[in-house]
Image (cartoon, rainbow, N blue to C red; front, top):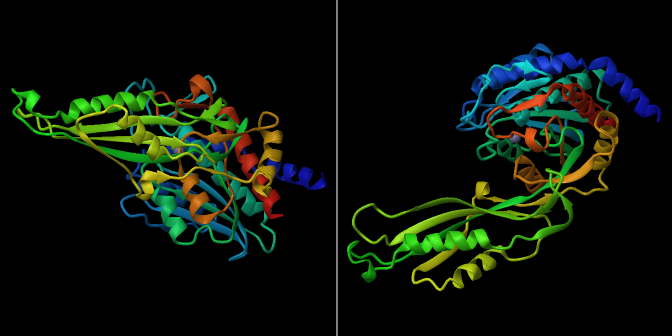
Length: 401
Ligand SMILES: [Zn+2]
């Protein structure tokens, strides 16, 4: 109890809530669409440098550089704070300036306000407070501001390859769904499939002589949309609803536009997979297509590139990381936090699978109608920014002390 009071006192003393808002606004004002993060990376570096935290750039091919900083004893076991600098592109429908960072009725508007510049600002302020409070001997805290997350996760992938998670005891990703009322302790995966439909060309004025690959692909798309998705037993998604699989058709391409029956067509789909599921998704898809008895030949293939195969994971509920984060969200969040599974794949999947280090994800965010992630008019309630920074600070300090 004494330790808890002590950490709480330090959080109050060292974290200025207004500063989190100020830094969030600065970050929103610098556009940083994936692959164009350079200016924002520089700003993160400049701020950490001004705070005396010796940041360094880690180049990421095709993207702005990551910014990394470390405090504590070299090579000691660490707690890693990870957040991404980049955003998706500006979409239609904005009424506010997406780079204006205007605060209106307690909400901060801007591209990346939810996803995840406020989370990154809160991590940075927490990290500075950790440096000021002093990390005990034999421990280390690492801050990673990464690029390319909204694209293929190149920034975090680079840090994994360079050993940035070696000796890590736990990773806190600062992306918050549910506004400090939940912790993502795992994520669904994403398995991407390409379905190739091969028909037979013929003169377009004599379609009966060919096999139309596009028409058959259209039947396949409908059959895919009708497939039954399974529910995960005892798991809740980060929308706070029961978790299940999803399947979405992402792309269809084929035909030449000349007066010929199209002989080929390709369909790309994603299956959002649930942790612990044992069934064979590829076999299910093949069976659904076989039942259509098409004349075209159909090939189904799982895409195995790193960016096409994110495996689902769940962090051990009994780990120090989950227990400590839960403890501190009871203080700074909204009571006992729900332990949820992120519906979308993210950097967490890579970290969990490539390094085996426990990962949790929480922070400032919204739920329901206001959860405008990757949508126009993205905005966030600013009253969670300070408490988020305190929750990061307290969780990390508690883990290293
Ligand atoms: Zn994000």
